[in-house]
Image (cartoon, rainbow, N blue to C red; front, side):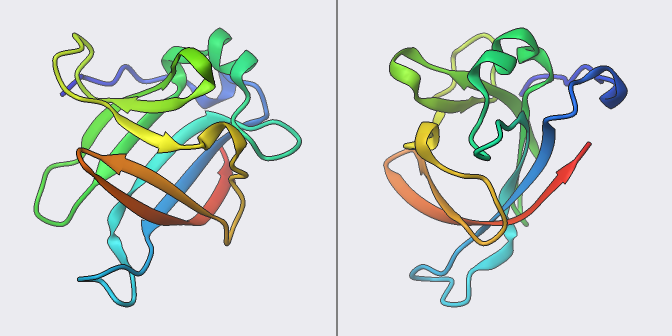
Length: 134
């Protein structure tokens, strides 16, 4: 796990948002679960998609926190991969596997939308439960 360096929200462009994703319903969680999810700090463009140009300029501020009820929070970076895919990496040295957002480059991050994340061999769907300015 990496150590997060604090970034002053006041130094970031106004388009940066804190996005909360919570597990949507799936086998084992028929009502979903607010205890499983992610918090993402990222810039969004006017279409509510992750802004790749601002990500390049402020990539160190683009973070993700994975939370689970029986584990410590995992703090990582938001990565923009070749071909436009987005991923989360928790180990800065690159030894750990990354989790990838399924078509995140096309997804709108707004309240009530759903996104999918590949975690190891499994794909899980998450609901966007909040999008707030920093």
